[in-house]
Image 1 (cartoon, rainbow, N blue to C red):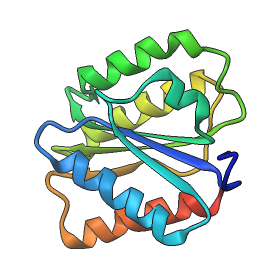
Image 2 (cartoon, rainbow, N blue to C red; image 1 turned 135 degrees about the vertical axis):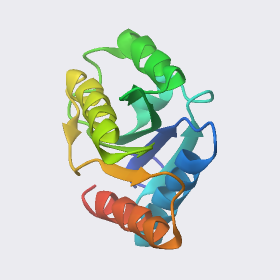
Image 3 (cartoon, rainbow, N blue to C red; image 1 turned 180 degrees about the vertical axis):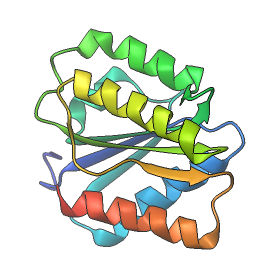
Length: 153
């Protein structure tokens, strides 16, 4: 919770190589901001830290799917979160992925959920999966995803 505003902090951490996952992350952030009553922090995985995880009330992870798994920079971030293991209980979370196909993306979504749940984070929304580059309709779906999460904080 932000001490000054009293608003819950929603942290979105993403990795994007081609820009598809970044578009999703930005739309999710926009949807959460439009809902209001939440402070949204959007960070690329390269800029995110364990301190960001500790300060957040809700953590959303997003990664493209590679060989049914999150991309290595996201996996590295998750692995390095061992430093805050057992300190993220009672937080909420969600995940999203861009993938070449639904089947492989489903495995990536599960891997990201498993990482959050291992930290004791409650998954509050089913994972969002978009195939390839998001269309305008899918961008709206991402915004709705962000708004639904913000509503639950």
